[in-house]
Image (tube, rainbow, N blue to C red; front, side):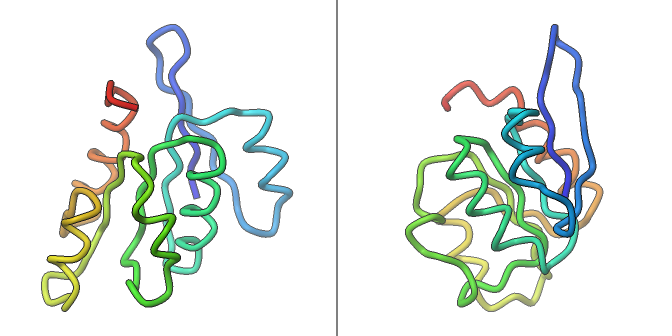
Length: 117
């Protein structure tokens, strides 16, 4: 996963993995955005984003594997989905849906400048 923040109008990113002490790293880094880069990171990214009041991106998430109360939390979010995902309409109710990796990365980083949260 990537954690991202801005300092003096500059974007700072840090790559972390689930085998690291990621909670401590996130606590110290204080990200504005957390982005999943693999499907197995989605649950943790969602939980950490809500816990740390951060925007987030989920990577090919499965709706039935996510905590619905966390999805409903009012944080800016981006979902990378496959074009044939049967839950596109439901994900659109929670946040922005994109269909390719490049757009996903751009849109998640744009959450840094989302003024409503």
